[in-house]
Length: 305
Image (cartoon, rainbow, N blue to C red; front, side):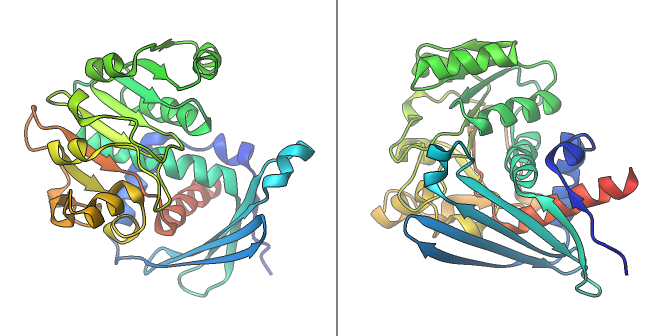
């Protein structure tokens, strides 16, 4: 009997590259549409989330996440978990992949794929809003996709922005968010905000706006004006429109309509910039199908190595 490998964060990280991942994500969306299901178990204040996906021709994956808020007081991570990957042909367990590895590469890779298709090829100024782990991953991913870009960073708590900028080494800390947005070719926003951080009045022709942070029905990072000024794209209509506040809140309020969303990754012929002056806006919603595509890419690279 073949024993399925357990791929750790450090072992997997050494094998991956961002452009290769985005190509794998694009290929995954050329296969039949994924079947997706999420389940939750609760023990106040703790949560177990299981996200499952099945793509014909790619296989099955279950991503389990445990959220234990009390771990912070114990000096342990509050979010843990793993991804189990199964064969499409036999259903046999093929690998167990580190949760944090899959999440990092899935999240930033999702945004980079959209930027490769929507941002102007000559984009040179990238603003990252937020200073958490996702911001660090976005800097890494965007550096691979736009190697000549100059980065700036803004965070509501300036000291966190300064600490991350010092760690990254080639990033300027922005003091005024409105001015920083106006200067950027690409704005990548990764916050935990429930109120708009990026204002539509600040946007400039030709910009690409990448929204990552909002994942609950009560969260959003842009206002109605931004949505209505931009050409709006999502990674998956099924996992964003009725589930994430970025779109759900304005749609229910009647200030934005779902038919304004131009495309998701499953209609690639429509997923592109129409003109150099167009403002494009992408909502990164994640989703178990992207976890499956990312996990399969990780396993393929592990096997090749």
